[in-house]
Image 1 (cartoon, rainbow, N blue to C red):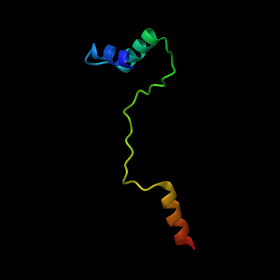
Image 2 (cartoon, rainbow, N blue to C red; image 1 turned 45 degrees about the horizontal axis):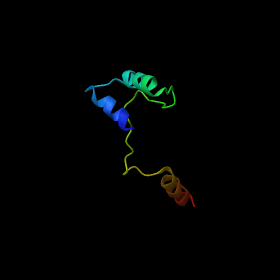
Image 3 (cartoon, rainbow, N blue to C red; image 1 turned 120 degrees about the vertical axis):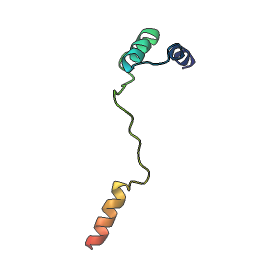
Length: 62
């Protein structure tokens, strides 16, 4: 992992495609990482869970 960090520090900005190619070439790993080409989604801790919503609906029905 340290070697990868050092390689990534050589360049200020990497595209996902460039990083994927670097990993494939340097570490002989192909498609194992499952990289996504999107912005990571952050879970909102204030959002109620589905279980809690269902419990409230069930309680209100009976």
